[in-house]
Length: 187
Image 1 (cartoon, rainbow, N blue to C red):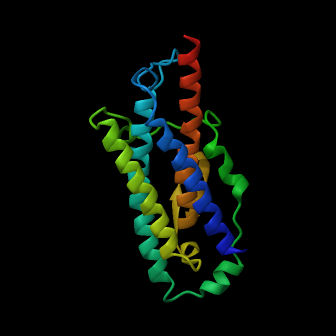
Image 2 (cartoon, rainbow, N blue to C red):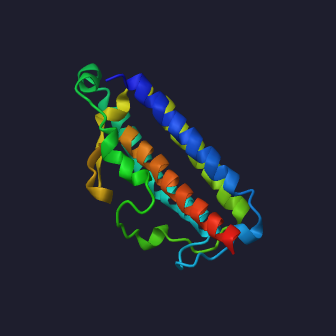
């Protein structure tokens, strides 16, 4: 496994998705607050949901990063990397809007208590947080700690995979925002 390529790929994926999320903050108020006909969230609510989900995932990612770095003192990193294979296909459904049913926890639902500018700044900070964890685990340490991910039955995933999951989650909601915008244009 080329762990350096994996880290580079995750960084690229994060940049691509976070840059696209960032562009949604520039939309006009009508587009941001349009209520889709299916009764789903507005784009502003989706942006808040992305922030909230990132917030909770980053708690686990931070703990995982610390444990992975601690484990790097006692485990054979080279051997772990050699025996690691990333099953990208196992994750791809996470990035597809509507690909599977999952009821998110209530604490990840938008409450409308943050301004658009606050959400934008917080998501930007979250992007930089992800990058700093990847930079910290630059030699492959992220494979040394796993946490269970129940979404779509992913099971035990390592810290790199958790960060990739976070990026895929944003990708999933980018599709949802595009769907909302197309409906706005039709109306």
